[in-house]
Amino acid sequence: MLSPRIRRLKLDYETLTKRFADWPLIQIAGSAGMPPEAYRITYRIKGLYVAPNGDILEREVHHLEVNLSLGYPRRAPQCRMLVPVFHPNFDDASVCIGDFWAASEGLDDLIVRIGRMIAYQEYNTKSPLNGLAAKWAAQHANLLPVDTRNIAPPVAESAPPSEALSITIGQIDADGSTESTAAPARADDAPPSSQ
Image (cartoon, rainbow, N blue to C red; front, side, top):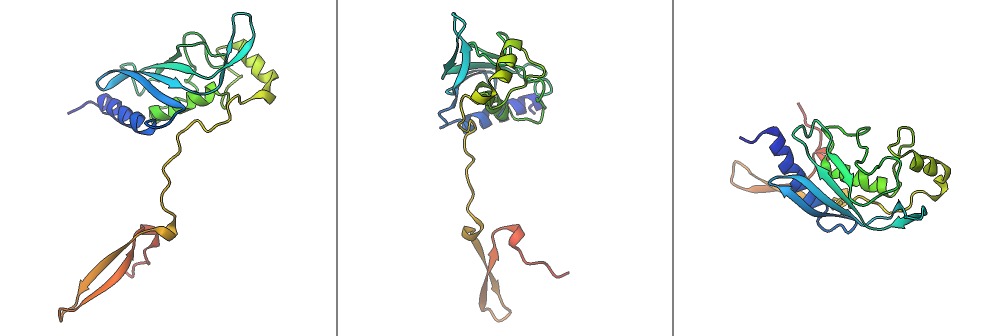
């Protein structure tokens, strides 16, 4: 029997590979372990960085490393950017996710959230890792977000109620004749039962 941690690692891997399979903005560039305990993620999202001359410039490709410790999922994944990002909640060594990590959150949702942070769709200037970036963001809120696209892959849409399928149920009467009735495909369309 697999431990709860191993089951979670397997579920995370399956979810990540399925959710980001054909999504150009977030890609799994690599993983280590079976099931994986470390991931390298590539984002194709506009974000900011500080050039050697001090200018704040846009970058469109970012790389993230995610490590899942022995305490995962109770303990937050350890996340660090492999290329510098100018953001209030990023520093050279880590991405601040402690404010919102919960064991019930999926790793895929965390990776989307970090993408939103890179794009400045989400940021926290109240308890920053990078005070200079927090000050800059507060002074330049009119320039944010730097990437307005929806970072998360679209969710597969289900058929509208008018296109819902019906199931035909046949009944055999005592005399051997059959009678068919259409039953609703969704439980909320079922007629009230008479009890």
